[in-house]
Length: 117
Length: 110
Image (cartoon, rainbow over all chains, first blue to last red; front, side, top):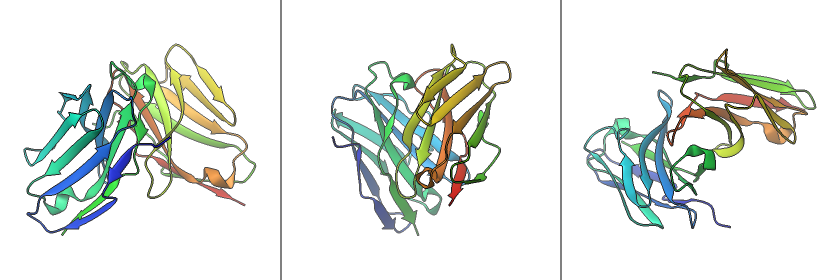
């Protein structure tokens, strides 16, 4: 079984450029989560989708960040324009939960390591 | 506001011995707790969980203990194996939002 797939695995870009991170959740999972991991803040939830609908985007740092889920098998996280402080590892996770309860367990992808110069 | 705290950033243990990882939380609304394991360059992998209606959950070499009155949980790994060397994250939730601790790096010595 394929797990959560993320691309690219590594991204190096210059400040001001647009960055798009991609995620394919596990087939049949109804909930999708984007997380960011930094040394200072650890793992923090950015946005949560349930059945392709954004339910909670309170963790999105600012308007430069946007996320979409056009269908059940694909999601993007976009940063425009990117800044050096956006450098982090971005994880996508999915869950089979129809209600979004974490009790169903979230399965994480391998992450995208982003470096903004 | 760190609602889940793992106060030991690292732990070194000899192969075959017990590893004990600790986690404290402040939010009394949390009713479900999870442990994730993370290897370098990989995403966190679910390890074991416990509901607030229980005080212990066991899965093979892994046991999680929950002390609700102290708002404390621990993960015991017995016996520790070299493949257990990783970063362990404690997480807690009352809905869909997982709050993670900072992680504890476990090194199992041969």
